Length: 323
Ligand SMILES: C[S@@+](CC[C@H](N)C(=O)[O-])C[C@H]1O[C@@H](n2cnc3c(N)ncnc32)[C@H](O)[C@@H]1O
Image (cartoon, rainbow, N blue to C red; front, side, top):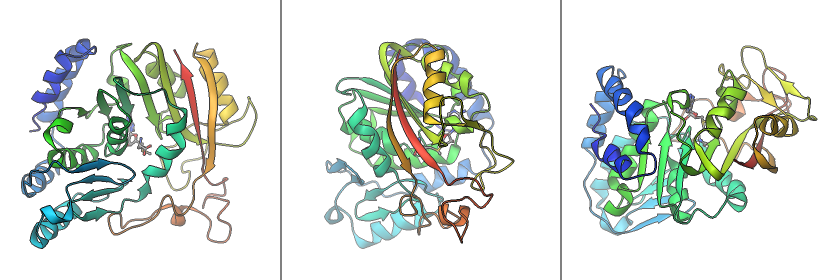
C-alpha cells in the first residue's frame, strides 16, 4: 500500500480541493489492486539509505546531496537498489554522487520548452504524463509554488518516490504524483499552467484529450504541449499502422500546423508553434540504467531518417496556447 495521505492533505489547502472527491476513491482502488511488482519496488525504496541533506540542485541534472555526504558503501547501496527500478527513462539524476544516466536527456526537452512558458513563480502547475517526475523538479526550479504530476505508470511513481524521499523536506512537500490517467480527472479549471509532453500520440482520441487538458486550466492559464508530429500543412495527419518506431500505442500524428487548427477549433487562444525538432540518437539512447532497446533500434539501420517500419523518423514539436 502506498501512503498518499500527505499528498491528499496538500490538496485540501490548494485551489484543486474539488479533485479530492474523485481522487481519494481512485487511490483506494489503486491500493486495493496493486501492480504485481509494487511490494518489491516499495521494499527497494525502504532500503535506501536515509541521508539527511540540505544540498540539492534542480538543474539539468537533478541532484540530491553531495558525494562527500555519503560513503562508498552508501553509493553502492543506492546504485544496487535503484538499478532494481529499471528501466530509468526520464532524467538525469545524481544522488549523492550516483549518476542515473537515463534513456532520455529530458533536460534537452526542458531547454526547448522553457523559453516559451509563462513565468512559473508562485504558480500551481500540473504535468500530465509526468513519467519519473523529472520535469516536476525543473518546474519547481522555475519558481512554481506547487507541482502536481499524474501518470498511470506504477514504476514511474516508484522512481518519483525514491527521488522525493531523498530530497530536503521543504521540496518533498512541494511535489506530488498521483497514479491516475487524464481520463480520470475532473474539470478542475484550477491550474495556472498545464504541461503535457509526449502523451498526445498515446491517446486514441486526441481531440478529447486536448479538451480534457483545457478543462484543467484556469481562465488565462497556459497549455504547454509537446508531441510527435509529421511534416505537412493544416490538413496533414498520419495514423500509423500497428507500430510506429516499434511503439504499439501510437495513434494520431498531426503536423504542427494541423495541431494548431485542432487547438483553435477547441477554443484555445494565442496558439504558437514554438519548437520543431528531430529526436537525435544522443537524446534517446540505451544506457546502463535502461538496457533495453532504444531509438537506434527503432530506426532503419541503413537510413536513420526512417523508422524500421519505413515512416519518417520522429519529429517533435512544442506548442503553447492559452485558455
Ligand atoms: C513518452 S512518455 C513522456 C514522459 C514525459 N512527459 C516526458 O516528456 O519526458 C509518456 C507518458 O505518458 C504517460 N501516459 C500514458 N497514458 C496516459 C494517460 N492516459 N494519462 C496520463 N499520462 C499517460 C505514460 O505512462 C508515460 O509516462
